[in-house]
Length: 392
Image (cartoon, rainbow, N blue to C red; front, side, top):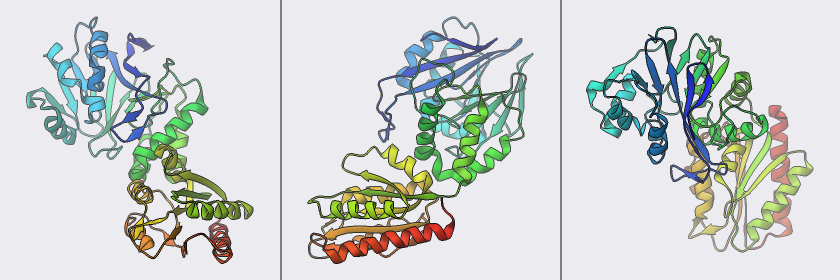
């Protein structure tokens, strides 16, 4: 794809990756992604904001063929999907200086072996004149690494936000045209990448509230010509209370745990509780992460293997612990053959979750009528706790 004009003397460069289905060997990409960089041509100086992932370097460098000079490269974030082509750009423009936070400087040297003489480090709130355009650098730590910053173009009121407000989505549209589709992709992105840093992101949101922002240009996904759309969503995700929702990741080997899960789901729905059920043998972990954003309760369903939980159930607990959702209650249901420590193992895997553990329901073999009554009681307890907290 060629350079695309955003506004006069402001352009998008980068690559739309239609085919990738896995990011960082971990995160599913059902809609592909894009790697966005931006060129700003001032009356005196020209700046490039970020680069692209190294596999996209050939297309990116071809886009720069008609650009005679770059004076500055801004590195918003040291992760290689944004920084990985910096050295190639510096070789093409050896007079350019690389602008970063002090923390990013160290990371970029460690990750990419960029020589120290290329760097200019900036302080929080520092500005840079391009002649008729002015850049302001704003520290936004832990979005989602410690060194991250965003760049505000004062005259045009554009926020270049890198991973902040991003979404993994491939599209030929430069700007957001389908808010529903982008909302889901952005929520998935928030859940998978930003949710563990919710409290810090909340502070960064308050910091940005003082700026008059008319457009947000992220490092992944489409540009937001109506920034309130994505900023309101982020405020909701970082500040919102849990909803009247149970997230139920489960795995079953010989149907006993599955029978328990199905009965519990029916009992919860009957009592007015919304359920998000995920079969861990086939589920998309991004969908599970999205559901955790709003979950008041997590119930893990698992058989017992070698005295502990099924590895898929352990993985779900590990994921929830890493993502740190604002969940308030946790329980476990499942079956066993002769004994084990499934509940103890799972409970020990979630130290980051500040949850109340509701008594689990475990059965030996196929669930009996007594076990099904216990599941009904568990559903009643969850529904009551949600009502007491005012979750709707």
